[in-house]
Image 1 (cartoon, rainbow, N blue to C red):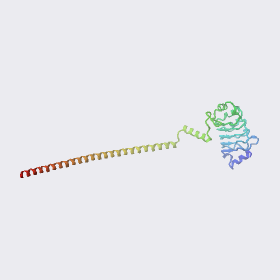
Image 2: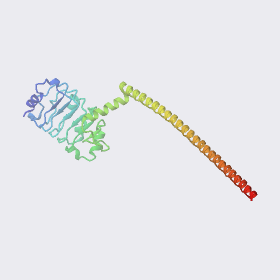
Image 3: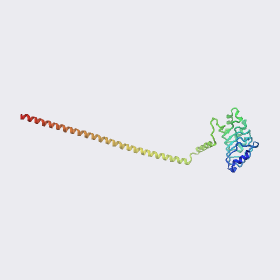
Image 4: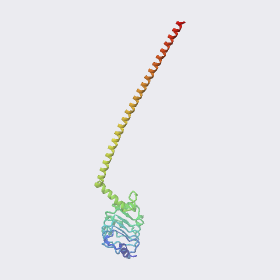
Length: 263
């Protein structure tokens, strides 16, 4: 299918100015040039034209909002200066599998000031000595080359991760949002209340402990007093028994004396 027909198919009864993503992979470019794509695609942010036999970018329309451009597996060998003129806000550019051979061709990308990720995998330029070092030195604005940064850290899977990082950076610079501040205040208040409740519970527990201890001490004192009373009663009973025994002995002695006198 030719590119022009494919574009009409992808629109799906939508107006070009409403489209933000457009995938035209594996269609056919007549004479290696772009057809059917024009300046009416004002909101286009993602455009993919992989494996469409594209050799020239001369007919690329102005796409000021375009951020991601997929041009892999084509026959592009030069003319990259058009990209900075037509798509100045590009952050991601995939040129893997094209006919790019030398650094002078890539030098035209210096004017893409927002470019963060460039893919030249499977291009002849990758065979140059010190290829990666040379590209990073030439295009100092990029962070990732062929999916890895200068320290060989892998790039995020999608631009969404980059967007999240950007949002995090903006939030750090701007400070926490008002809603977050309120939530933090509420959390602090809840923590203070919990601490106060814990302190009150501990005080009650200590009070109960003291009451319990004093009660136990009173019981022990009472038990000791009962033991003393019991001992005293026992002693009194013993004394009474001894006195009784003495009385009986005296009585017996008197009786014995009487009997002797009668005799």
